[in-house]
Amino acid sequence: MLQFEIGDVILNFGLGNLDRRRLKIPLFKQEGCRTIMRLFYAAVTSLFLLFFFASSPLAVVEEYTPPPMTEEMYPCSNCHASMELNRKKRVLKEEHTDIKLHHAETMRWCLDCHDAGNRDKLRLYNGELIKFTESYRLCGECHGPQYRDWRSGIHGKRTGYFTGSGKRTYFLCAHCHDPHEPKF
Image (cartoon, rainbow, N blue to C red; front, top):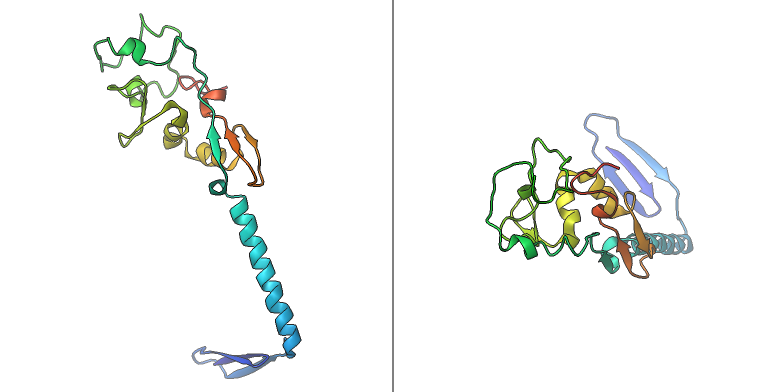
């Protein structure tokens, strides 16, 4: 057994077949020192918790800017509501001629991200429909490290108060990356 004595407290540790030892550590023998150390530990812990929660994204109001869209592009239902749904993967020759899909094009198709039933919404992998202002959630399903870095402010653009004292504004992935051809 290994025994430590710190002030009036004795700690015993069973160490199997090791020799019994007694180690005295003469710390905080006086009550005044103990009180000071307790206050010091409480202050350090409080400062840590204050810093952690004040800098947490959950402690501030967050605002997401809408994705860059022109009036001709949105709402999508202006055109798609009257169109017959065609789920077949194909090159769009007559519509969206300005869109070139260079985003995992051998594996992806428009309806992997855009909802077939409501073109004014995006569709997550689990089928949940989200607004275009939440497109970061869709991007994050495949681009996890970038999403993590974006949430912490390392990737992408964010403006506002970084100390937790005010509103932060996040710019969406589509502000810097074309969602159909995301590389710079």
